[in-house]
Image (cartoon, rainbow, N blue to C red; front, top):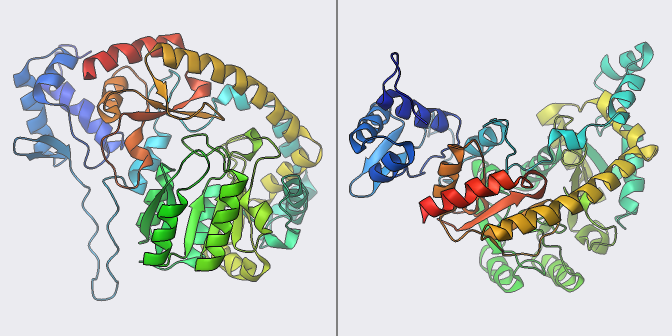
Length: 467
């Protein structure tokens, strides 16, 4: 709550609260501020105080007013460029941009559990074997061998060898020579995009889908073509029409435990999708970020295709340590050299010490046992969280699976997000998961961070206010 202070008026406090959210990108460009009456009621101040606070934000250039529509977060000013030497970059498909999303991911709202986060809580990921593996690798000789030169361009050969064996467990057969390590899975996706695409190229993506991927592709100047994602896989009729009309070069898919729905691709849809890729000549990037949470027998496009038109992307941020930033890609032999060139141009190398430590953890079964413990704990958390969500009036649009739940709240979740921020909770509104941002009643919840009945009581109170 706002408090009267000798040093700062209520108007200044309210303006600073919204200014901070805008600076931290918790209010994305294009987002609408609450109406004057609504803001006054929520914060317990007079409408005149809200008007004065919004005027301060206007004066600071953080918002702009639209007649009879309200106040909206202003788009950041684009840096000036030489239009004669550089082609114009296509606009983002909506008011989301990469900076807004990434900064929002890193901002710590409070010490409370965060329903909108995309990773496990830190205490879930704490292990003894990881620090031990790192210590094992930092002996004087190992430290010198790994640190005093750039290392292997494709990544540590030991890690690529164990990754090849690990992929075989998913029936994805890739030799170590087909595997390139990266600075996380996002870097792998970026390498593929920069290698196979040029500004203006059409790219098919799943919708709903990963908001950062939409923003990243748009920032590279690609034309983002959304394909609706259902329980069996992408809408193949829509994909067929897009392929015929636009001749896309790439389709980006999370085939197993899709984010945010939790859907997994069916074998029938996978076969038809691969036939379409072959017929229309596009590649498929299969982002298997959630492989450690999925059953071994889950259908993977790269397994059925044998890495011909598919490129497999994986990482360890979700299951092991978000800050280790170790990812990889497995590609058709004909693409390996081009992908490697792009990696070298972007990072030169990847962290050999951490790669060697990770190889040790995989080879000795420590990562596998850790993942098994996480899956058991997640199963219990999912059951508790789903019951609390339904008791609070949420409806699951997709069967609860994996780390995330995709729920219908019945209210505008952009507006709900602003109410819950006042209580120290960051949620993931449904609009974030669509290429063109539009009001949505959906939101993604993290089952590991929504087991607290206190959050759901706060949620119910705020939903009633939005309604």
